[in-house]
Image (cartoon, rainbow, N blue to C red; front, side, top):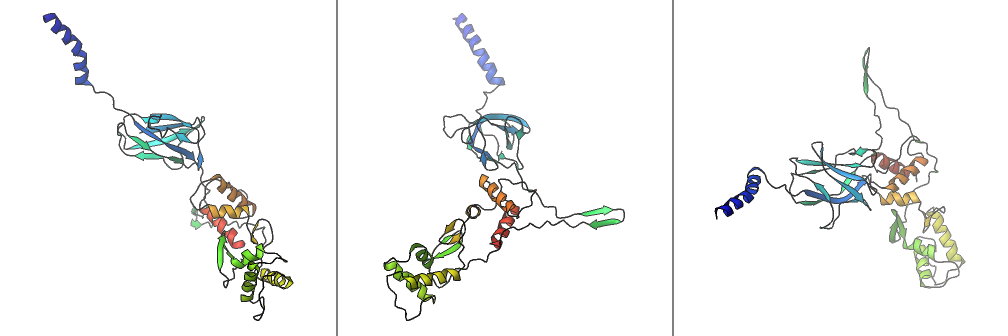
Length: 308
């Protein structure tokens, strides 16, 4: 009986010693989500790292579609080991250099063992150039102000008058901010020689605007008189007849992109807007285009729209 007691005591000794002096390590904290730079998803194989006070506390690899970690509860994630930081800073490594971005991407909050956090990491890498607004300089005779050098863009486009919609007709919609009336729709749809009720509607709209006499009796037939009235109407609103038209209103690729994006957004198509603005003279020739829609891009777009 004494031997059995001694044997059990020997077995329990390591457990009691470990329990007295140590504790089991806590579960890591985990992060998952999407990761991008300047609005574009990072490529597969890119490393995403987590730092605490300059020390790396976790690392994972970007999968397809710019995803680090997985949304699946049982899938792999960016595991962050226990730390005493109040802020975890994220960086990415593209195989050559480790990048933080112009603005710190971080998670503010203390470590919570076993907690899983969904966090999309958006790194801003490229900044739009800053205009030098002039600074006072000091010389031998005191301080003097050096004004900025203002470079005006060379506008190569032909200035066209802004198309004003006719207010006496009811609007049926808008195309990139230009009002399209029911009369515009009918004039674009119907042709000489046709007969239907919409031709009668077209004639009544033209009569309202004075392109037919008050005593003209409308019909369902699109004849020479109707064609002449439509021609006069189109001439009165200066319809543009160049590339890419929607019911006679000029619509270009850059107009579509301008209508789609706003200040503060990042996308590859914004680079296309900037290239077109540069080609038309609304950016300097040495301006380096980016994927970011900042104040300079907004100013160039405003000048472009005013010139149309």
